[in-house]
Length: 288
Image 1 (cartoon, rainbow, N blue to C red):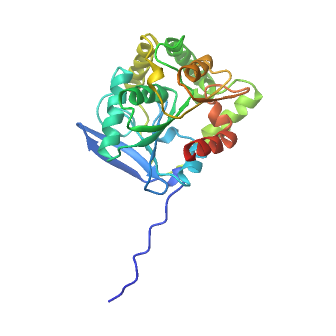
Image 2: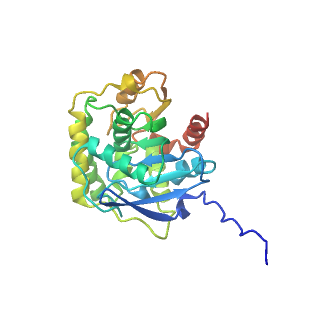
Image 3: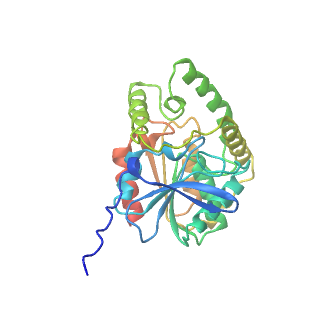
């Protein structure tokens, strides 16, 4: 009888090659991808408005997945996940909780961008024991000044992008100067690195419902963020037109002990423009 051990499958650490999986919970089939070595506390990624599994920058994911179990997923009604997009951030946080529990995790690190950061705050407030560390990027607090204006900004930039046959993210995430335009092109190109088994794009209706939820979040009474005792890293560009940069500073003031990084000459997608600096900072923070 052959006693040779079955060779171990090599660990996937490239987001472009991360296998796609599904898990059913609460009447929804959640689409997700995972990569990196399993075991320990996973890092779960919460994506931005209109974002699917294909909208994460591999230059951010891959360095974290080198030594950590990384999970990205589609909220209900988004991408390949079934169900409906809820019209409130609180319910999105409940859905995220359902998904995380369905995978059997009792403790996670949370990496969130933009809309994802709003969901992350609600989740951490409601389930403080589930979250160990928070990375909140390009986001702001409930009731934050001018968050509700994101609807007008988004639609204006979608029109500008359509007229120039560009991706709306080139306008929404980056400054329209030489540096910003170059960073935007490289970012959009990186999102195309996965060539097989790509996600379904978000529907217009799902996108509009997400926008309504953000507007409602912006017009709500502020949450008590003093209850958040999780180590928190906050990052943004200095010229965020979607979720104004001052709101990152507001978060930093309200979450005690939090760390703040503001990148110069960059917008909503500052972490993507400065991925070469930000990814190591995020890895260091999550490893600490």
